[in-house]
Image (cartoon, rainbow, N blue to C red; front, side, top):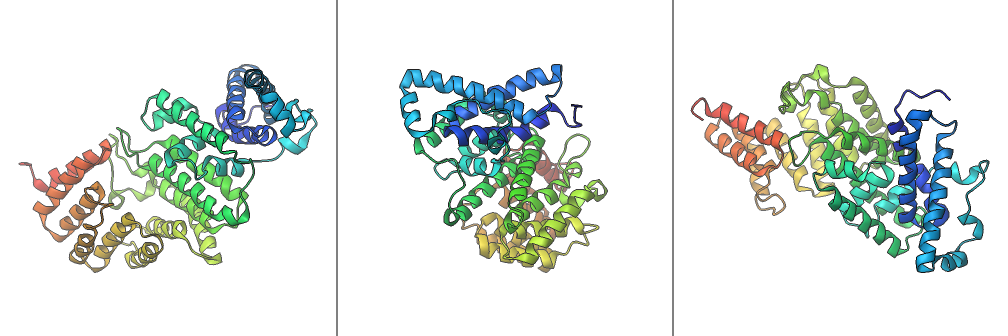
Length: 418
């Protein structure tokens, strides 16, 4: 078999959830299956670059993971008498390596089942994110720890606790019933959205963007969309990611400094990602009903399709934010609507809208509220107030690129003496 254009690492990340699904469904033990798959992936990462890809990479991984799974199950059975309990629950052939020509198990794609399992309501959001990146995304514990700037041991404990909680809960390895599926899908999409948001605008640390997280969230959302092509919110989330990430190359300057949307070189935006995102959200909104991710994608599309910042259709964006605020009740949406109000009706009206948000405890002391107020004061020509709020915003954000950008805006307005 000739080597494909993509790297071994890319192939393993694609195959990891498929192989894990085979083992988890057959043995009914997600935690042990995940350990076995990780060892199979390690073996492949070591052998394939040196020996070449096998003719059937997924079958190779399934065989290696099965053998390791059986070893782990037998070792655990010897220690905790699991073998007797498993024998009562499962036919004996389940603990035997399947024949190479047995297609019914290995050919099924359980990516969506794994996503639902990793995003189960019994897990905290942080645990769901970590487990999703590990089990479905194929990232190592070290990679996930680096992405969230925590020690590897801390992340390993978080993932281990999440797997133990799933094991103790007795959650079956299957899609939830139709009555539960919509609610559970909302959790899956929320986790994918949070992974993308952290990748697109890192909340802490020296980097503005963590491409590994944003790219992985797009890949996983594509997988969900392929499995649920008629779900409007899945399409909306994928469109939102593509339309937002299309601007990535223009968001930073030569030294890594943050460039605001209005000042970006739109010639550096990715036209293919924009076209795909616009097509996705257009089709989804035409089918209805319209949900929050579709509305956010529609806003992103209006920004991306505008030939310049001055040509942005702010009245339409304001209308979309109004609908989105009624649907979500999210204070950040209300903040964005206030900025859109200023762009349509003037900064004074926008500042009045921001004043209402001062009473919302979810935004108290948040750097985004100060940054929005600074921007509107700047538009209104109130330089001292703009400088004060830019500095207040810089003091409150944990993102170093945002700190530098906000302090630079304050310094430019304050003049050489500032």
